[in-house]
Image (cartoon, rainbow, N blue to C red; front, side, top):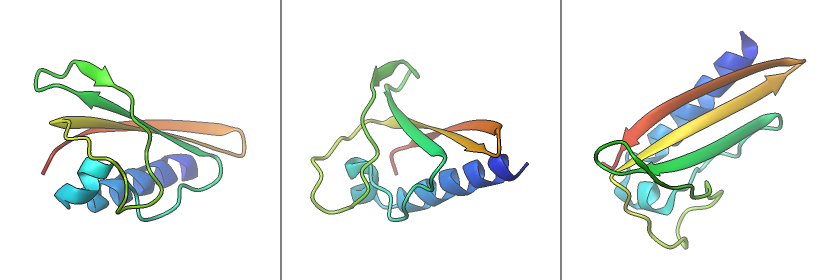
Length: 93
């Protein structure tokens, strides 16, 4: 349960950052990803088809823009031998 809660907190933090168009386009997060967690991104077209797998940037401000209309956030957290995986699709604001 703790791994799932942490995965949800990471997703909500990234989604909160991405309420800003600039942060969404830069694929950035203002909070560090905790140890034991992995975040992967997948760009999607308007039909939900994958178009690329950019990296999550740990800083905002100087990353080249990526204006994908929808992006999937996948978070996997492993704590004490338990693994939880969550994913959510986020549309460009």
